[in-house]
Length: 251
Image (cartoon, rainbow, N blue to C red; front, side, top):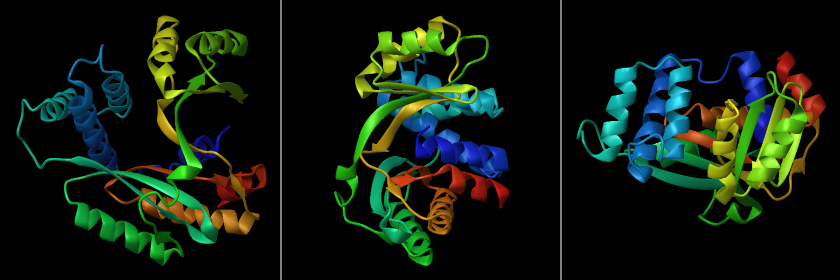
């Protein structure tokens, strides 16, 4: 399982991910707005929007909130400030590379908060292009096995153009080229399989392994960045070992 997925799993188990419901709804609203702006308000043809809506429903976001956010994205509603997507690059402690995706209506505030969070934890904000070369964008799915076998999901993933399919406990992780996202989404949906996570992610070309204590320091720095209101996703090239996972879960 990738470092990103391991980190997400740890946070779910600890109940630490987006503990405040208001923060959850804020991030979901921004994702709905940006998805609708990018691909329109039809969930059948806009796969990013479909995933955002499914995620919002999982978090029990009221239907009227979802519809209002979509209308903001399509321009039907002029309510609220205009959001924009911004990607920043930088470093966590120990030289771990970070890519931070934000949705904001105030770039100056976002960059100031991000710079402060990184410097406080021993990291730093970098120039555009400083770490992006260490990552590639890919489609990533995390699919619960449920009543299906690994082989069945494996075959579906390969049919859709996946590069890698692995199993971790009761979940199957699929990594595929960006252009295979729609095909795999459709194949999973046709089989009644609903991913716990599905989207485009930045995956490191090579992971950096650190001693457990250093890994925990980096993870705390990443968590501080993830807690910023404007931050949607954080990607790193940190390798999270089983020992580090165990130590993190026991905290």
